[in-house]
Length: 197
Image 1: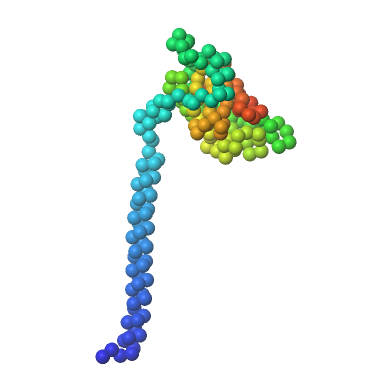
Image 2: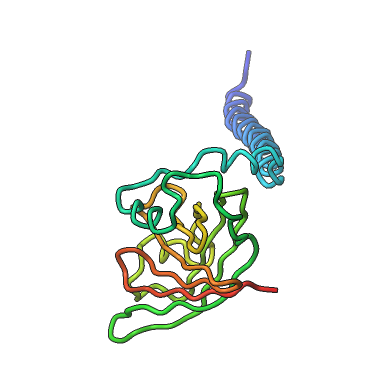
């Protein structure tokens, strides 16, 4: 026969065993979660294979109606094979942008990094200090991370678009050797870039 004292002691031990089991279970689950996150981070942070970079520009940019004027102005609308070699804009570019602010015209630094594969390429454009400027929203949201872009190179011009489409950001740059001057379409923002050597 169990005494009342033993009965009370066994009832106190049962909750303690449940708490210990719960703590052990939570510890095992947290360890498994951290291991899976660490493995996922290692895969995510590893540089992508070269095949991925090469395939990013396998398809041409979608030509929108307003881009026809740029293409026709560059005599590339028919894509003739006799065209002279295209300029190489790959590399780092630095300069400045100028645009409308809240009360006055603003000027700040601009950076760009481009990778080119023939006529097409991709990269990013960074405009500093754009929170109170008349620029596309994606430029302000991305900030120092830069806006991911794709581009189409012509003889003396480059058509640059946000990688998700021209409705987010479109810019047309004129190429003059190691200098590019461009405007953001729909905004009074002038961008002047020089190739970093």
